[in-house]
Image (cartoon, rainbow, N blue to C red; front, top):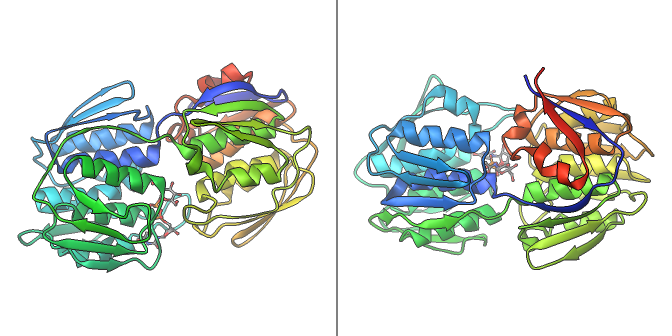
Length: 419
Ligand code: UD1
């Protein structure tokens, strides 16, 4: 088992580039299933989750070529409609393949994703939306057996919560359905806009992505296209947190600053100087951070749940008390216990975490509890006095390309070792 060894203390300085968004890449790879013709995705990050999505595509019968950050997919030879259980377990978001496989092949057989580190992971909104489009779904001993009689049919669908995954699944099923789908209370995340932009390039007719109501006019088929994945706004937020924690001065580049609009005001509240460029954000941290105030996670364009853990690491070192309210996932404070092993003072009560800042954290042996929680421990370790040993770093590798190599040029003392 690999570990990260971090010697903390020094401020990070310099420029760091952000790779493509994991959460855009996965639905885009699922979308390739719909295309007759080759799909080429650029800026597709070299992450274990992207590897898992490519394995699913290969299993389905697609030809997949992956060279660095470019992935080419030819879905002409699709011959299967199921996703093996281990691949569903490895990456719960593989459920996003459901709508695409059903639309392309006329049937789909996937296992239920079940719970995960963040608590229960229901897919009721996905299933209700797909049923409205005419997908017949049977739930049988943990498997979802789905088939289409003829062709899916467009329909009005209203989501009771703007779920990102449900919005993606419904879009993927609706683009080649017969007739019009009007999706209300749709998720507005940048990843939805990226997916709709890709699908439109392939011949789909989608309008309103990024707004609460999305209208899809079904088309007969999609052709392939070349597409560049948007930058990962959560990776950007993580690097900004690392800079803030360490009292650093860092230019985070290759980003879409508008995607960070819900996050940057929190760093400003903490006393950081923020300079927004066309494709970059520079953060200059003060000698001591101020408390973050109230941080409430919300659907986009609010403060993202995925940035909660890394920002909590920064608030642990701030002067004063910060309050976090986690409104998206039920169980997303597992990192708090690990931060406390490093000297953080955090009180948890249900969806609320109260962080009383301390003047210093100390290194410790800590364990990544999930992807973003692991990233928070990296940020804390970089700021802590002494050495931090980070275990279970496979969580981090799901969403950050070789994080130690990315951070080292900023002066971070971080290295990967075998056990
Ligand atoms: C996506 C992101 C994840 C991010 C989350 C919220 C990917 C691969 N993952 O996850 O990183 O944290 O958006 O921004 O893009 N819910 C239901 N029923 C459903 C679907 C969702 O109750 O059918 C609930 C979930 O339990 C959760 C909330 O809705 O409490 C938000 O989930 P959702 O927006 O669907 O997140 P994901 O798409 O799973």
